[in-house]
Length: 408
Figure (cartoon, rainbow, N blue to C red):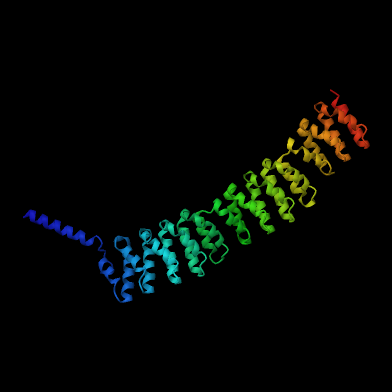
């Protein structure tokens, strides 16, 4: 008797498992009943079935495949409800991504809108839909664009390839707030985003945002910023120079572009270029001659002078530029001090300067040689020759220099 009861209970259990594996009940009907209703001739019945199956969701393995098939239903509302249901199921329905991706391209904007929304609810599982969602950012319908933005944002870093397109979408003020949220979720501090961020500098209301992002990108943003230094828009050039300056030594490769910009026709650009070179510091030594040249421009004088001080040019490479600076009344003392700091390495160039055509340069060259003292003995022949210089001041300075050099 006991054996019969045991067998009976086992059979009941097996039957129960077989009937309940996919038989989830919703509003009094089982999964199989709702699935059967998907084939009903009455669109209302099919609509009700789709909604119910969406509620049952991943509890039954048969639901998602059935809903995917329903995306081809002849009734528009049924198709929309099926898309909504798949979206509500979310990541467990990721096998529907290809079908939903195709639905995004539907000419019916409601189908397209809900398909985009559903993909967003799939999260990272909808990674393969990113290209289609990027294209949807240019849809005519604002709601489609909004949902595309939200969908990409839901994918987080998985949607990094969408960053340039999203940055471009910032120009659309009607979806800008959502785009900014999406970019924060995805992360836009990437080298790939730099060109789009540079282009965004054209929009005054976004300039600060773009500049901040470019600075965060750092060295990898420099090539795009160098290209921006040739833009026809002066404000773009000026902003690019400012950002490069804020990057400091990281922007070393931009020195040639910034050096060229010292002669920009726009004062704001040339001043920012000089400031940037100063912030780059010692890596901008090659710009020293151009900065000395820029000192001739009263509008760029102050920025160039500060840049020269920050770069530091008490080196052999700076000697020709420093001697050239002796031509200018307001730079002579400054240049002479730097040449003295360089010391004996400057002697050969100073000897050549004694043979130049410009009196003040010959005079200062003689004075500096005298201050260098015995280490400038190589200049004695040239200084001796200068005792016959046509300029009285040069002759006097050369005499004093010879005395200082030969004193020891």
